[in-house]
Length: 550
Image (tube, rainbow, N blue to C red; front, side, top):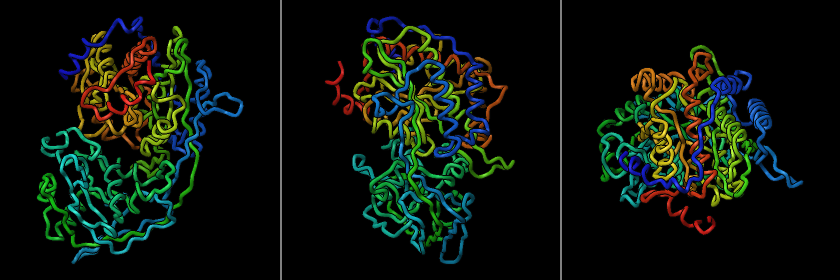
């Protein structure tokens, strides 16, 4: 926090031509966008569904009405479309999942969605059939040579199912080589699957625990038992093992117990460099069919073209997709509407576009990018960053918006993780001008920095943050804000209950969006190029393209 406060004084105000004034963002417009996008008619906005078609049509139509210009793929006539084609592999389990564990003394049947959540295989196979594969515990599943850390210790995992813990070895103690409570990429489930694939494992099962995962089993179940998507890969087996899944903690405890092992004791051992893999004296079997095909989803892009430096772009991004139709909740509701996550982010994009179009034309271009398949692994933003519509070297910054608060105005503002980037300091300074303050990500252990659509930009060197609403509410303070956040995470996040409500107070979102406007507008009317600060893993990547920026 001290670094951030000091940095606010270092931002070169003279380099920013005329500080932008916050526009008046209409909460009623925000509410209407969210209501439409999260209605049952849009079927949870799943990629490659009728819901996607309706979503793309709605966002495109709104961008046209606002007066943005299309900024998608170049067409044969030299003009741009409103969308960017995003080819994706689509993978879906067909029929029942049969899975069980055999211990020395017991046969444990596993119910999909209950004890286990198996993901549709993303290796372009029609069927997964694993029979009596040995189970082995490999701690946190981390290989980090720069930290002199290896949970595998030379173990050959070919033909085996590896069981690992979620998050980093530091999570429990808050101390160690992995950033303490703040999650590194090694703590993300995506990394753990990738490492298992690199080592040739037959599969990887992650033990779910609510605190280190930062979400409950319902989120795991709903996110992993429905249709899976991935970017189209030449060799998917290098990124995905044949079987990927999660298991409940209680099942892991029982599995360890039947092998004469203590789960908690082994977890403590796994938090040390001396940990060695442990044979669980059990085998795993699974059998299920997979339907796989390649579909084309859409990113949606509209922009306000810059008057002086049109080839330099500030991006406002947000994902339009949600989970679509999935397993029913206790009420029988199968539509995952995604009102907060992330219909409100798309509402923010549209109203930011309206504000930029209504104000003085910016000197640099401003791109409004609604991306697909965030819920499937940041795939739309990953595709854009790998195939940019406008050069990344001349992309000034990405301001991503995902899941703003509907609980009213807050005295603070936040971001997903600490990006060590000037862009974040600019947000802090603008908040201070409005009498607000900055709260660092209150749960860095959740790894939010790696879970939002700014990350594919960041890992290619583009200064990028995901901006968010604060929790210190004007009405009720931190207690009320944290209560609202906890209620959403527990009862609505990635569940059918994430629905629009007429009772929401969106005046806070309106203020947040006005603040985000000011950050982008100042950059759009300046020669400032935000930088990654010392200690950031992305600084060298950005520095390599410095000659392309003037």
